[in-house]
Amino acid sequence: MKRLLGLAVSAIALAACDSSAPDNSAPDSDTAQIEQTAPVTGRTAGYSEDRNAYFGDLHIHTRSSFDAYIFNVRRTADDAYRFARGETITHPSGFDMTIAGGPLDFYTVTDHAEYLGILPVMDTPGTELSELPRAKDMFSTDPAKITAAFQGVGASVRSGEPIEEMYDTEIMGSVWQQNIDAADKYYVPGEFTTFAAYEFTSVTVNDEDGSFAGGNLHRNVFFKGDAPDRAFSTLDSPNPEDLWDWMDEQRAEGYEAIAIPHNSNVSDGQMFRLETYNGDPLDVAYADQRMRNEPLVEVTQVKGTSETHPALSPNDEWADFEIYDRLLASFQVSKTEGGYVREAYRNGLKLQEEQGFDPFHFGLVGASDSHVAGGAYAENDYWSKVGIVDGTPMARGSVPFLGTKSWDSQPDNPMVNNAREWFSRWAASGLTGVWAEENTRESIFDAFRRKETFATTGPRMKVRFFGGYGYTEDMLDDADLTRQAYEGGVSMGSDLVGTGEAPVFLAWAQRDPNMGALQRVQIVKVTSGGEAIYDVACYNGSPDPATHRCADNGAAVDMDTCTPTGEGASELKAVWQDPDFDVAQRATYYVRVLENPSCRWSTWEAMRGNVEPRPDVPQTIQERAYTSPIWYIPAE
Picture 1 (tube, rainbow, N blue to C red):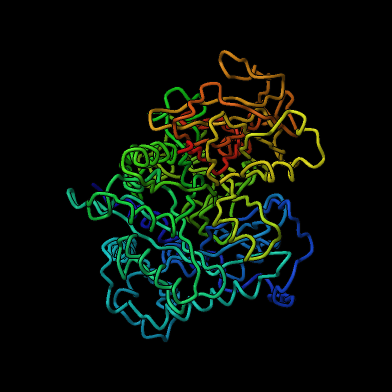
Picture 2 (spheres, rainbow, N blue to C red):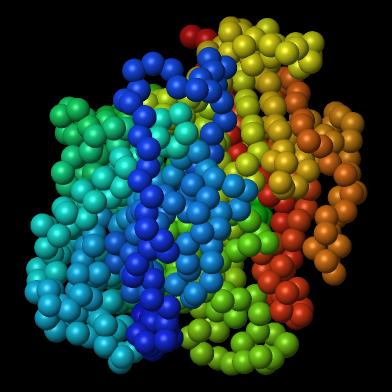
């Protein structure tokens, strides 16, 4: 199989090295000094015992990531935080990027720990690293040399074997400290929260055919407060279980941390496999350690959505949403089983029932995985994620190459193939929502720990989910609804212990006022034997009791202008009991909220380019949100 990442590098190498490419080595303006408040000793403004919804992105890369720098990204951690606060920064392709929807509440730079900051130093004349033959090849004007040099870095990351002449721990430690310092600099308790964090870049390697393809086992590692002076990377060990051991050791030293896996959809079925990394059987100790270190999973981002797959959920009409299934740097299709969270919930319940442990008892978050320091969350203002390689509509595959208007006359070359197989299938997603008392590291991290989190595909819709035994319809109109819900039950991310009767669930969604109206709220039920989807709140009336579906609300899109048509809700809420409840059966319940249809980013770009939308990707989508589950546990 061809080494396709190398082809992508070849396709943009000359442009990346061209002196006419934009010089993004300096910030747009002098970085303003962030006014710091005193350390948190009490409650900040906005504190609420009923908890507020805060939105952020937990997965951002800058020039310090080896795979960002090679694609001409020159933005720093400072630039990333300024972007999140609402400032405009420049894309590697030369256009301005400003965050859609206004400033975020929290944001985190998660550069790859492997060779952290090494490539910028290799590209700096006068440094020892710049004199390496590998550096001269990496930043030459010869695409073949660039390809070979960069593939060598990728092979090292995958194998866990360092390239000794590049493995400068002093530089990596210094850049890690710079990222910690940037997070501290921009942290303003009560206003804007940051965390010291990085990405652990483990990949399964397919050696059978010598391909570059691999299954994604990446994790982002976050520290609640202070962080250690080094980041554990795949150059220490590619085994995520060794990462957990290291995290346990750091926790014992006072560095509280969690890791969040991402892109299980392209893990080649490995992220939620039913054995350890080395092929041993799972056990209680494994489950305890995994949940202690990985209480959350990233369910949606640019490289697709990992909730479920049509092959796994054939009776779910909304399962075929932003499915991306190509292995990293490959056209090879990832294995489906073992790669999606809903199936993992089912397998976790089965393991709990049969063996007494559940290693997949995780909550949900969303992120962008942007490698250009700023996330593209809106369909009508999308810039993908990589850098110069996908920085134009043609490179993303939404507008035909060579100035033609026909999708049938595209040339057969690496850039067209990459656009067709990769970039056109990526998504404008996503964000994490948390319910926390205040916008501080302590409060938001505690929300991560208790899994009171939800993921959205970009809109900042607010979603709440509670389970208990005394909720009533009358509560929905009570001004004190939230307080009653907390006092009378548990919130998303919690276990609900049985009492011998059917629980009552409370689902509540509010639209993002800048985005689409709400169409329906659903509760997804998972058991060890299957799954079911129930509409529980509709814009137009109540769900049909026989089909558990809302009536069609008539919402659509004017495809000439991308203007939504039809009506929807600003708020939907309901109390609901499972009509198929079994008091003796464990079950996992989570909420999924659907907006009315809207144009996909590729359709917006085709319309602006005056061409027909790409025929092999959806022209419209339904933006959505997913809550962390509530796990029903039968009474003993």
